[in-house]
Image (tube, rainbow, N blue to C red):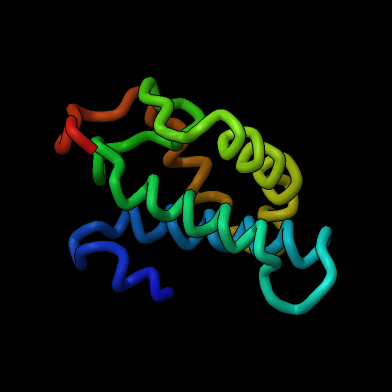
Length: 120
C-alpha cells in the first residue's frame, strides 16, 4: 500500500511518520524473521499502525505516539510496536539518519495540538 494513497497531500508530517513506522517494522522483520518480505505478523502490525495513524484525532499537530495522551493502540499491539521501536530505533541513526533525526525533532513536541477529529 502506497503511503501517498493513505494520507491527503497536505499531511506531510503524517506521511513522514508513516514511512518511519513502515521502515522500522521492515528492519525489525528482516532482521528477526525468515524470508525476504514482511511476515504475516509484521504485515498485520504495519497495517494496524498505519490505520491508527490515519485516524489520529490530532492530525498534523500530533506528537509521537509514545508521548500522546490518547492511547488508541490495543495493549497487545502497543507492546508489539514498542518491541519493534526498541529494536529498530537505535539502528535508524546508521541506516536511515534523516528519518531518525526527523523523528527526534518530532519527539520534542511535548503535547499534541488540539484534536482535529475527536471522534476518530
